[in-house]
Image (cartoon, rainbow, N blue to C red; front, top):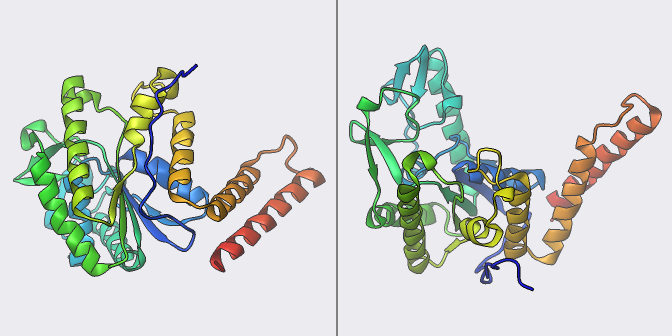
Length: 311
């Protein structure tokens, strides 16, 4: 008896190994997969600008890395006692403009160095709806008055045009770069259910076009895995929008099976096992047995890290 609708994932045109240097950017779903990779001890930077929901904001962040143009005070707005960057998540907001700019530009410099070594880029688009302020797409409205923004939906052609130029520039920067796109399965209910469907369809069509244009671009069907294969509210968190921890784990296992060979998968399993040991909270933490368990877990983690470094 078949109780699910399996999503058939075609063989990936390239793989992922521990020798790869990666960056994950996009919606909170990119945080989920990025954290899974970090927990498995891969070399990865996860959402350095914070969560970015739309394709344009992700592209603008990457363009800033390529251009090397520092953020300045005119890129900020002051509201509710804080200085905010319209290109960043609220975690960058500070009480002084200097501190906000310092955080933003330190991240920019770090990502410029990291991007020169990056050969695997994971991009997750969440919505094609964008907010513009003075004609510029913003990454976050920071609870500013809605009258300051114009809301619109990006077209397939607009997204493809922006990313065609961006991918060409990225390949000039790093010719060995491979890009994995995903569309977030998280529904944006504030947009309305119909509008959310139009938004996701726009993103899927844009990704499909880019995959046809570039041999270094592929698509991983996280969206279809949640909505078509799992397709049950027991795989959602309490808000009925975000995937549950079980769903994230399921997608992570599918992702690993798609992009990793047997030797990499074996190391992932070892790394995750050690992580569980390190996070274990014994009933009697000061007992000799608990201290020995923690000591052995730390030693084991060191051995795996050394093994990965020597690959």
